[in-house]
Image (cartoon, rainbow, N blue to C red; front, side, top):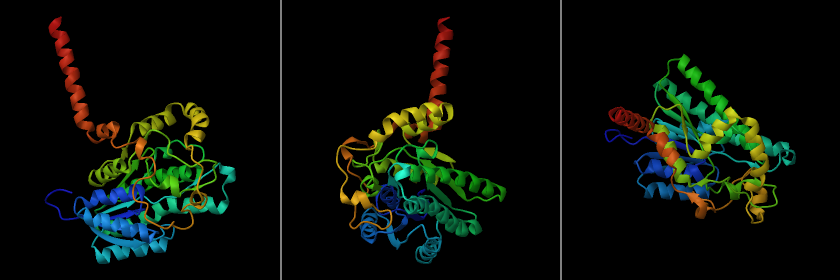
Length: 334
């Protein structure tokens, strides 16, 4: 937000915990009006208190994003109470940590409904309001796993692949209509969020993110950046770059590597607790988990690859200047 603009109206799904919670606080730091959309009322109340303390205005909108009518009602409530929506961040997700054949059809369907269809219904509700005004930004929170699936997360990987295809399709339609509404996607690596405590698990040990792990504030900065810049996609973290590149250059090699490392790499030494067995798949767990998961001690608070992405033109100019100076020096020596 520039200094000459007023506060934006920002909707964030999955805002009660993890990356959504961190993103809500980042927009609040700008003084924005933040609509917090999630199922758990206790976590929403905690997020609202933090948003207000950070300088923003919070509106709690308890919603199950898997329900298209509920998402539409949430969008209507936001506009009636806060004003026209400027930014919609689609971040809600849930998953099942298990081998595919161990996941029941109702579990797979539910994870898909929240993670994929939640993004679809969010985009639909946002576009119905942004298109007539011909302005606004929709940020779809994606993953490196939109390009390369990993074991134990087939519902999540399938949903993120689907969001990527959906994203491509919607952008072409908006271009066809000459619309100024901007749809962007942020591709993320593993983050230290409560997802690994609240995702349903059928594994013998407690789930953990694949290293290297980043704090949710790193993702929040990227989401905030994407909401204010007209970039098609934003990649966060070096793992995202090599995952995308590897999926294009040598997918067979990526499969071999992940088959050997990613099953054990997604499980800590701790046994799963009872909450992990059920997770937040069908209903939100009680309490307010906040933004961070249990892996603070090994999560990175910054990403040099993200800084390079954010300042890509300055980095390119610097590289070009350095190359020119080196060439001139060599020529002078000759």
